[in-house]
Structure formats: C-alpha cells, structure tokens
Length: 622
Image (cartoon, rainbow, N blue to C red; front, side):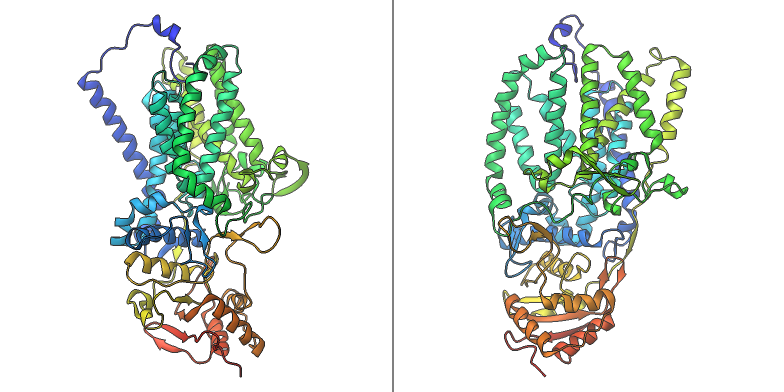
C-alpha cells in the first residue's frame, strides 16, 4: 500500500528483510527509550510550575478548567468507593444534577489514577495526567511515523516531538486534559490502517472498537475529528487512479472490520451515547459561541504567546483566549511545509504522490473548517461566509468549536516534517547544498515555536473547615453545603473543596451550581450553556466577589434567598479567608458584608465563617 508499505506486486520483487539481530533490536529499543525520555523531559519542562507546588499553584490562564478536571478525577474515586453513575451525578448542581456524558468526564483517567488521587490528591493526579498526555502524544506520534511513514527513526522523532509539543497543544495544556490527549489520534489511525489486513478483520475491528469505546470519555470531540480526518484521507487517497485498484481490493476486508468495530464500540457506548444525546440535563450544541471560537486566518502565520518568538517580542494575541491558540505555526514553518511538499512531490512515485495529495486535501479541508462560519482576519470578523456555515447546525458539528479543527494540521505538518527529514538524512539522495539549506530552514522554522513553560499563579489553599471534616457538624448525610460565592467557572473554589473531600472518602456533601456544561432554559431544543441557570442569590454573591459591589440587601432579596436555599436544599454556607478568581483573588471583604447583611452574624469556625441555614426559614426578614 502506498500509504505505508509496498503493494503485493512490488513485495514479490523485493528480497525478504534480513532477520533482526540482537544488536539491532537493542539499538532500536535504545532509540525508543531516548525519544520517550526526551518527551517526558519536555513535558516536565512545560508543566514544571505545577510540579513545584501542585497544591497551591494553578494554571494562570485556566483556573476554572483545572477545578473541573480535579473534580472529575475525584469523582472516579467516589465511583470506586461508593458506586454511582459514571455519566450522571447530583453531587454537583443539586438538585438537577450534571450530565457527565455531555461533559468531558475523563472517566478512564479518573479510574486509572484513583490510587494517585487517594494518596496524593486530585491536584497531583491532574498534573500527572497533563504531563503524561504531552509526553505520550509525542511518543505515540513517533511510533506511528516510525511504523507507517518514516524510514529513519530520527525523522520520526522530529515529527513526533513536533506533534506532541506544537503550539496548539501547548495552548490546550492550560487545563484541557481532553485536548492534550493527542496520543489518541495516532493510535486510532494506526488501527484504521490495519483494518485492510486480510484474515485479521475480526481482531483488528474488535481492537479498534475497544479503543473507540475507551477514548470516548477522554476526548469525544477529538475522536470525532480523528474519524473525520481518517475518512477525508481515505476518500482522497482512494480517488487516485494509482491507488483505486488497491482501495477496491481492500474494501470488503475494511467494511467487515468496520462492522466489527461498530458492534464492539456500540456495545460499550450504548449507555454513554444515550446519556449524551437523550439523558437528563443534556442539551443541543455547546455553551460557546462558534463564531467567536473560529480561527483567525492570520494566526496560522503568527507566533503563540508561549513560544520563544513571543519572548523575543513576536507573539500574537489573535486567539480568543490563551487556551484556544490552536494554530500559530509561524510564517517560517508554513513556508517550510509548502517547500517540503513541493520537494517531496517531485521526488515521489505515483503511489507516494497519492498519499501526499490526500495529506494536502486533509490539511486544506481542516484549515478551511477551522475558520468558522465567517472569515476572521487580523482580529476582525469579516462578512465573508465560510463553508462551516453550512455545517454548524448539523449534529456533532453544532457541538464543536471550529478553531479546534486546526489541531488536525499539527498531525499533517508532523508527517511532512518527518518525510522531509527522511529525505535530508539520505545523503545519497540529496546534494549537500540542498541538505544544508533544508536543515537551516528546519532550525529557523522550529526554533521560534519552541514552547515556554505554562504560566502559573497562586490559588486559595483548602480550608481546614473542609480538610479536618469540621463541616460534618453542620451538614446531615446527603446534605448540601456551599462556599461563597457559589461555584462557577470564574470562581470555582466551592467545586474544588467538594472534589478534595470526595478524594478522601467518607461522608459527602452536595453543592449547588458548579462549573460544567448544561442546558439553558426554555425552547423546544434546549441550548447548552456554561454552568447552571443563575438564580437571584447567585448574582447577589457573585457581584460582591467579582467586582466588590456591596448591595443594600432588602427583604425581597431575603425572600429570593429563602426560596433559592430551599430549592437547593442548603444546610450551611461558608466563607473562606481567600477566594480564587480567574485573574487573582476575589473581594472577600465585600462578600462578607453582603452575606452578613443577608444572613446575619456568622460563626467563626476553624479558618472560615459559617452560616447555618434553616430551609424555608433563613434568611429571616428584618
């Protein structure tokens, strides 16, 4: 097959490969270990700010998602200890609950890392998964390239390390355990390519089905992108006159294997998919604006903020936020990729040209999709419609953020870099001047996008009131407790305290609100939103915490709070000494004044202020 191996006809003309010697095996394994160590070293370098003090340091650019993933990692411990539904819970957003199948619940990570979560806390589990994701992505791409495309292991290493630490994935390392699971793509593509093996359709189809079923909870959106990428590539590759006979001959085997994949994956995902699309608290679309989260065309030729180029003053802020800078390859790398494709195409035989054409089609298709419904250029949204406008209301596409399609180009560029390095490392194939020119171009293209470590900041420490389980004196079994303000993406401490308590086991408490994706109110098709639908009391506390606004509390506010507290079933609320916000600590003094005006004088317990709530009675009118 021209994608990865010789055709059957050409195999007959070639001598069998020499048997591997012990020395060659050791040499190969030594290089594998070298790449693995390099990948782990790079990952630790990127995340070292969290490793220094995982309990108080937090990613500066995404405090909210860190809290959410710490929560789901702790929920895995709760599932193993106390049982429950992996895809739905009322511990969060009580009494309605949260559809975890419609969120990124990373259930597999939560179960596998449960011992770490119990022994060291979800803070350590979080940075462990983040670090291993980055390193594992680089190593998985290296192994994939080494097996299917590159002749030289060094070429595969160059491509693999680029894929693992490309600007887009460094950006998503700001809190996204799902999108940093970049290792899923090369593993899925590996088994997709193996589906054509005759006589092994049952085994290969079953393995791919198990893989898809496992990866669903880790990165459902990334899995969707990988499936689209595979489909676009195979269709584009098959349409060549050179490869069509091979594709037609492999079709029955591939279809049989895909049938097995569908059965196995369907059996594993029947309940998660039902919960995702039809379960309680599900929704249509996403809580984010697709037009806003579209890639700016200029960002492909710009440099990310966390890169050496940015340190030298050439960074760009074209991304909608620091966690969604998905392309930012820089002009030198884009020029190198185009020049490399021209060079590779001229040197390739017909079969390899079909592969390169399919690769180019994949790159162009996903680059176009990433631009969203309307073209953005240099920070300005234009009136020029883009093809994504035709797709944005279709199932699955309506839940995707367009700019993330740019991450597919990371794999495309990684493959081009590996193939180009293959040629350059063949001294007999390329003249010395050309080798020198391309090697210099590699340095100029890749050095500016070399990543800088993730930014980190301080967050509020866990209150002794929670850590020492003093809260149990104020909340009955199955009761509801909340920190002030109620948990939300920009003030998620309350969700963290619940997560840390879940990790320790024992009695648990429920909390209102929280940071998650859930349904909004009204309409035949309920749209998604970030967090719970706000109540009056939410805004009363949040306004004080975020802006320092001190509301003159009225009896109407107290009546609203009474109704809200009774709806949530709250038994007590508490105010820690410090409150973490998305851009620093929040206004403690203002929040204390408003809470005291609403609820009366608090109790000073350990290191927090506590207000007991009698449901239906408190707060009393004055």
